Structure formats: structure tokens, C-alpha cells
Image 1 (cartoon, one colour):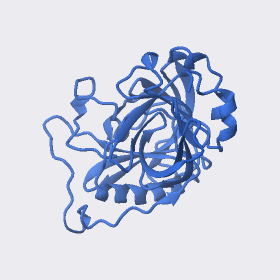
Image 2 (image 1 turned 180 degrees about the vertical axis):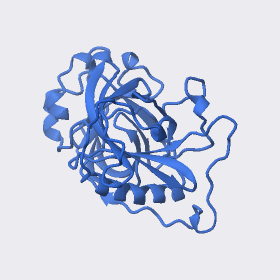
Image 3 (image 1 turned 45 degrees about the horizontal axis):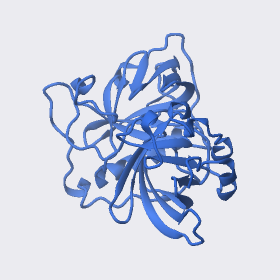
Length: 320
């Protein structure tokens, strides 16, 4: 295929998915324990059901309550122990977030609170509702989120949920320990991974990802090429010479998805069907694992940051 493989004519080959969610948390994921996945999945479902009906109460002083503050790490596949002191050091990864009184910092992104509820938790659920003004990677946007604290295996857990009933999402984080405390969460008996029941899967219409260009991790956006770049479209993802259409999508955990893809090569009249696992810690990065065990990590690139010809391609017909 030529360098301009994302021309508008390709739009007619694609079936629709959803538009962008207003949250940016750039963290690649790892594989989490079955115990944590089961607990998080169950509580996340209950939390979202409660919070979508919760009222919003604004206050003048936009400071997040103290119990939410500190350094947290994405719980999906978390291994080892993260520490509060990791932030700002070589130990910090893009799985970490830092919540301060006036803002929350992600990898290459910061969101400042523009509205926070009164001190009492919404609907008695122990949650707060926030609106945020975010900026990062040359873009600005607003977001509304629900935050709730839970205890899992004696560890503090933060659930971050979208109150958008059309495009809900939930991310789960574990609180990093204070300096000198290196005790990792552990389970035993009925709570151990070996005895935990498998997480239930649910059919969803789309993956919770920003549509557009994704570059392989380890490659800067301005160095993208046919070999490292993919375009996430409505209901499909394509590279220079292949197009994989999403035939079915199941959510298997808080950030885990199973996708049945039908992939074809440029000019081919046949397609191969394969089931691919997606780990999506945020709406701008993902990790896939294919049946042969091959892993692929990618992150979103703002189109203006890409080299020509991708920077100048009109992809609106493919991603809307």
C-alpha cells in the first residue's frame, strides 16, 4: 500500500464505533491477579450503578479531600510494591498517577479540578464527583469523573468512573505505600487467585479508546512509519497493509477486553479470524496479545505530531 493508506475511500469499509472519552491516563498495563480482577470487577459494577444516579454538589474551594491524595498505581497487572516516593524518580512509570489538593497528574497530562462536591459523599456511597480541566500533548479538554475509595485485601483502592451512561468506563488504582513500608497485598484461602471464580465477561459496543493514530511504544510520534503506526477507526484497526475489523467485543475485567477480529491483507479477498486480548489502562494506550503469544504496546499520537504524509491526511471520515 502507498504511504497514504488512510485515505477517505477506506471509510466505506468500516463499521461504526464510539467517540472519544474525556479522560487521559497514559499508563501501559500488565496482567493482574485473578483475585484482584474479581474483586475490582464486582465492586466496579456496583460502584458505577450507584454513582450514575448520584447528584452533583459544587463548592467554591476546589480542593480534593485528603483521603484521595497521594501517589496511586494502576491495579491492572500490578506487580511488586509501589511507593509514594516513586513519583518523580526513575521508579515512576506511566502506570502512576499523583493526586494533589488542586490537581491530578498523569503521564504527560495534568487535570485541574473545576468543581468538587461538598464534603459528604454522594448518595452515601463514599464517592465524590469532579469536573476537570485537562491539558497534555498539545490538547485541552474537560472531563467529569466519579472517584470512590474501597478496601481490597486490606489495601486502599481507588475507582475512577465515568458518569456518562452512553460510554462508561472504570479504572482501578492501588495506593502506593509510604516510605519504609514495603508490604505487598496478599491473599490466602478462599481469597487466593487459585480459588477465585473467573471474572464474568459482558458484550460491549466498542473499545474505550480515542480514535486516531497509535504508534508502537518506544517510537516517538515524530518518528512514526508504516512499520510502527496503526489507525484506530470506527469498528476496526488498520496498519499499512492490513485491516482488522472488530466482529465482537467483550469486556472481561476492569481494563481487559477480548476482541474477535477479521483481518485481511491489502488486495486479498480472504480474511482470517482471530481472538485478540486488549489491556486498556486509559483511552490513549493499549496492549494486545495474540493467540501466538505476541504482545504489542501502542500509544495515541496527536495527528499534528506525526511526520508527513500522516500529519496531513484527512481521517475525519474514518474516525467519526
